[in-house]
Image (cartoon, rainbow, N blue to C red; front, side):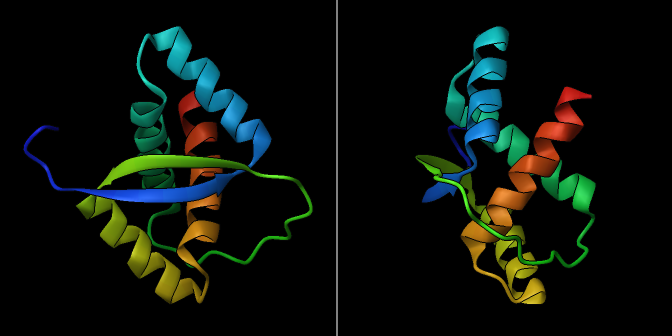
Length: 104
């Protein structure tokens, strides 16, 4: 990862996903940033480029700052454009999909 280009991103994460992210990172002995990137990549794989639907947000979200590989950021940007949603909303949905994929 030292040679790949990273983008610094601040996002709001659903509390249950944030708790799962922390728990899985701890159980695997890795940092939360790396687990965040794994969740995001798994969510993109599971979604397979399909448009996402805007979700309703009525919960208090946890703010997280993380470095994301530029290629993942680019794929998120394309999906956000196709879905006509903001990148943060897309990332939140992808993190949830990624968590489900990795927890299975």
